[in-house]
Amino acid sequence: MKKLVLIVLLACFNLALFAQVQTPAASPAGSVSATVGLTDIKINYFRPRMKGRKIFGTEASVLVPFGQIWRTGANSGTKVSFSDDVKVEGIAVPKGEYLLLTWPGATEWTIVLSKDVTLGGNTQKYDKANDAARFTVKPEKLSEKVETFTINIGDIADDSKSAKVQLAWENTSVKFTVTVDFDAKVMESIKNFTKVEPGNYFQAAVYYLENKKDLNQALEWINKAAEGMNSPFFVLYQKARIQKALGDKKGASETATASLAKSKEAGNRDYQMMNEELLKSLK
Image (cartoon, rainbow, N blue to C red):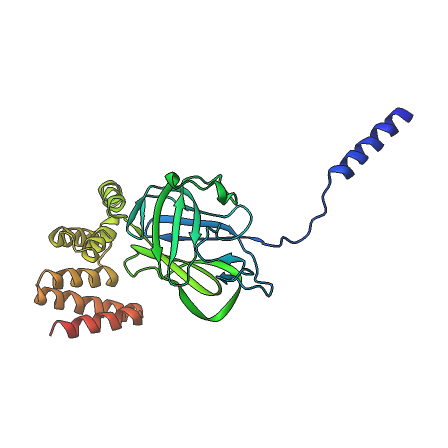
């Protein structure tokens, strides 16, 4: 019995020895992600606070001196991943994970995506040979102070082919553009899934229209979609747009009129307005 008690006491002692007191991190972890086109962009980083300090500049007291390498955040730095091949500021970058390094400046920042994600905060061991991309961007002055270092993914283009990554801290903001290419994926999807589900002809037709591809093929597909889906107003609206793009104003007007009537029956005000605008453009 005494031996059992001793074992329990030793176990408790070892547990207490290795247990750690948990407190809030000085630079808490943060993450941001977005799907641009069909590509997932994910950023994991650590977020230092200003705490009354001067962040960027040339003075000896600043936290991040101009012209010197910065891990871009705190702790083990910032990691950026892309689920597909992309272009960053026009430079081809294969899919994968990268370490984000920066050299801030008053009028220009140098930004690097490094293949060496193990570098972390050991920036003195940075090797240019591991650069996947190196480019420069112009900083902008923010009207409101950003107390905690923040990374955003925004400014997603209307065609979903690009977005901007923003780094913001103190009164400084820098942005760089990530461009994606999803056409090959969509074309393969169209090839595979229109054979399986005729309703996919609708999406295929709209994609061809929006991306200025073969409009005769788009018309063939939208007709198949209309036939298979009993010509709902939203399919007819897109058919009218395709007919207009092909120069068939008479056919487009007839189709848009039919779409307008069906959208009124369905009580869909958005498509009523869209069809009315389309009909005006055909006069």
